[in-house]
Each structure stands twice: as structure tokens, then as C-alpha cells.
Length: 158
Image (tube, rainbow, N blue to C red; front, side, top):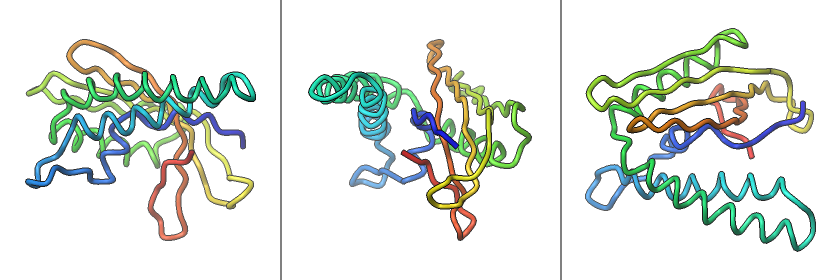
């Protein structure tokens, strides 16, 4: 199974639990790190040789900027709702969209499994997703892959 890997937006990475020193969630930091990773991943799909290295660097910078802006606007309730929707999307039929919405913030999003199969290298069951997020009336779309691990947890793949 060939994987497109523009990982499942900022929300999936928030599961890693990035927190500020005072125990509060650092939304901007999460967004910056995830955005940089996603941007670098997109850049790695462009060009070859030295051109690819430049595309990775530019992708990381652009992704970090956009991710920090989105991360500033996601709150804990947004992430909790999105995480529940993402968990449900792990078992829903391919093509069925799972939506989340936070009426308090006005933010919303969807997870749609687009394909599933087995990773040839690990033998793990994997699913590709299309994810959308609406933060402050601005829509973003991303694609990613998650694979079920031997212990039953799901891991975002690179």
C-alpha cells in the first residue's frame, strides 16, 4: 500500500501531549512543530537531489508558520472533540465521514477514511485519511495515514 503522508492535521499530533511548563497546553508550539513536520514532508515529495533539500526546508518553514497560526486558535475542547472523531474514524467504513464541532469556539472538522490495507514493511493494518479543519472560518485540508500497532494503539505514519 503506497502512503500519502501529509499527516492528520495538527490534531493528531496533539495526542503527543505537548504542554507548557505551567501544565497548560501550548497550542502555538504544537501547531508550529506539526506544521513544520507536515511542510517538510510535503517538500520531500517535490523535486530531487539538492532541489528536494531546498523544498524540504521551505516546506518546513511555511508549515511552521501556518501551523503556529492554527495552533493558536485550537483549544482543549477542540482537540478533545477532534480526538474522539479521529478514534471513531479508525473503525468506521472507508468513505464515511466523521465530523466534530465545538459550538463554543466555532471550530470544526472531519475525518474521512479513504483507503485501508496492510503496510508491506510491518504487516500492520493501516488507513489513509482525508482531514479537514475549520478554524476561525478558514478551512484547511490534509491527508495522512495511521497504522494500528501490535498493542492496538494507532500511530501516525511518516
